[in-house]
Image (tube, rainbow, N blue to C red; front, side):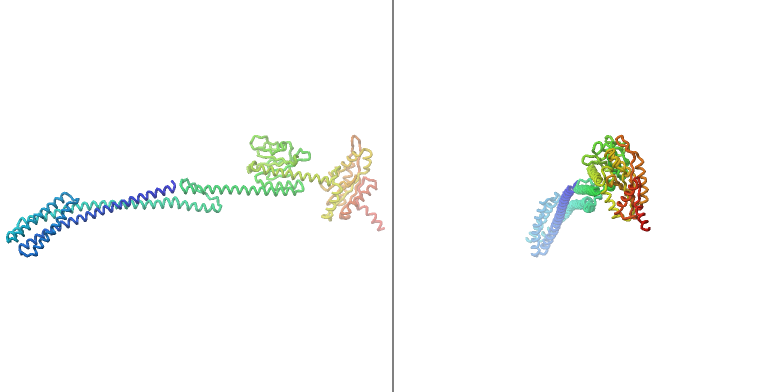
Length: 601
C-alpha cells in the first residue's frame, strides 16, 4: 500500500477517533451536569423540607408565647413566620410541579394540607386569645390535636427527606456512573489516537520511510561517486519508497550500461589507436621480415584472444610461406599450397570449424579449432593470407571484430604489396636484368658504404672475366652468349650466397665482395669458382658450346690498401692473369713484389 494512502487512512482514523473522543467528553460533561442538577435538586428539596419543619416549629412557638404572654412582638413574629411559611409552601408547590416521583408529590401535598390545618388551629387559638378566652387558646395550642398535627407534619417532612434523598442519590449515582463511562470512553479514544500516532511514527515514518531513506542515502551517495558496484536490494513495495528504489535501480543499471558503453568505447578507441600505430609502422618497414614482426607484435595487443600467422605467396603464387606468427596457433604450418585455402580461392574471408556447416579449409581440416582466413590483396592480386584462430576459447565474436580484421588485412596486404613493389624497383635499380646479379652502381654504393662505416674491417674483392667471351657470340650467337653470362652469374650467386655479394661489373666482367675475408680467403674461393665454372660443358640449341674458363684477380683491404683502390687493384691482378694466358687467379699483392725486389737490387 502506498504511503500516501496509509497516511490518509491514518489521518482519517485519527480525525474519527478525535471526534469520538470529543463526543465522549461532551457526553461525560452532560452526565456531570446531570449529576450537578441531581445534587442541586437534592439540596433544594432537603433545604425546603428543613425550612418547612423549622418554620412550623417557629410559628407554633411564637403562637404559644403570644397566648401565654400576650406580647405583641410574638404576634408579629408569628404573622411573619406564617407569611414566610406561606411562601415556602408556594415554593413547595412549585417543586411538586417539577419532574419528581408520585410518592414525593403525594408527600408534599399531604404536608401542605397538614401545614394548612396546623396554621388554622394556631390562627383559631390566637383569635380566641384576642377575644379574651385565654384558657381556650392555650388548650388549643398545647392540646393533643395541635401536637398530632405538628408531629404528623414533622414525620411527613422526614419521610420526604428520605424519599428525595433516595431518588436524588440514585440519580446522582446514575449520572456519576454515566459520566465515568463517557470519561473512560474519551480516554480510550485518546489512547487509541496516541497509539495510532505512535504507530504512524514508527511503522510509517521510521520503518517505511526513515530506515529505507537512510539505506538509500548510502546507495545514492556511492552512485553519485559512480560506484556502480553497489548492490540495490530488491524491494517489491508498491509505494513511493518502492518507486524510489526502482528509480535508483534503473539509475544504477543505466550507470552500469553507460560504464559498459564507455569501456567498450575506450576499448574500441584503444583498438583503433593500436591499429593506427601498426599501420604507421607497416608503412615504415623496409622488408617483409620487419613487416611480419610488426604484425606479430601488434596483433596480440589488438586482439588478445586471437592467435594467428601471416603467410606470403611465393613468386609463382602457388605456395604460402609463413613469415610471422603470434600466440602459438594450433595450425601454424610453415607452408602449404595456396589451393588448400578457401579464402584464397574465393578471394573473401572464410570461416572454418565454427559448426555452421561450411566447408573447412584443407590446411585446418580436422583440427576442430574455429578459425578464419583473410586473404591479403592489393589491386586485385593475391599477395598472402592472414590466418586467425581461437586461443583457449578466448576469441571474441569474429562478427564483432570482422570489420577491424578486414581493415588490418587490407592494410597488411597493401603494405606487403608496397614492399614487394619496392623490392622489385630496388632490384631493377641495383640488379643486372640478364644475370640477376647486383649491378655496377650498387657495387659502387656498397664500397662507399663499407669505406665509410667499416673501413678498418677486412674486405676481399674478386674481379672475374670470362675468357674469350667474344667467340661465343660470334660462333653461336648472342643468345648463347647471354646463356653463358647467366650460367656464370648463377654459379657466382650460389657460391657467395652466405658469405658475400656478386656483381656484374660490365660486359663479361664480374665482381665479388667478401666481407671479413683476407686475400688468401679470396684466392681460395677464386680457385673453387674457376674449377666449378670450367668443369661443366654447356650447350645451346642443340649445339655443344664447350667449357667456359674465367680469369680472376684478387685484392684485399685494408691490409693491402684502402677500400677506394680495392677494385682497381683487383682489376690490375685480373689483367695480369689474362696476360699470363687466362684461366688463372692472380693476387694483387703479388704484382708489387718484383718492383720491390728490383728496388733492393
